Length: 157
Image (cartoon, rainbow, N blue to C red):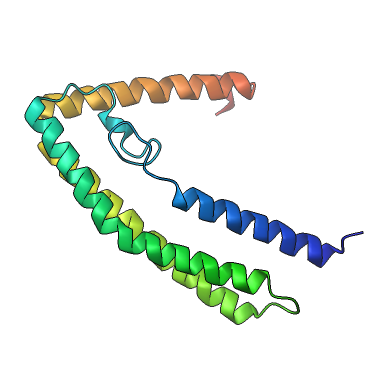
């Protein structure tokens, strides 16, 4: 029978592996971003010139993120090494890796935001307005679905 600490370590290892796999996935969004990452572009009718600009922005973003992704893989390997080493886990080393992961996540988030701003800046005011209208409709529908799934009514808020 697996002891509680062995079960916890096994769970952490599986979680770490799953996180590593998620970070290793190639961009999958409709315009080269991660899943849903730039969903505000869905349904926006881009001109040929805008499509080329968006493609260029995503290519540059992808290239600039390669270094961060390598750092993330290296960090993941070090985390695995700690988790998969027999004996007591060095909590201070684990804490250092968590701090390092948080810093990498912040860099990635900043890079994604910078990319989103660049894309936003090539859109016309009408395209941004249309994207916001579409987003608002989708949000309202998602809220309705959530309310139905969870048995909530407007008076429960």
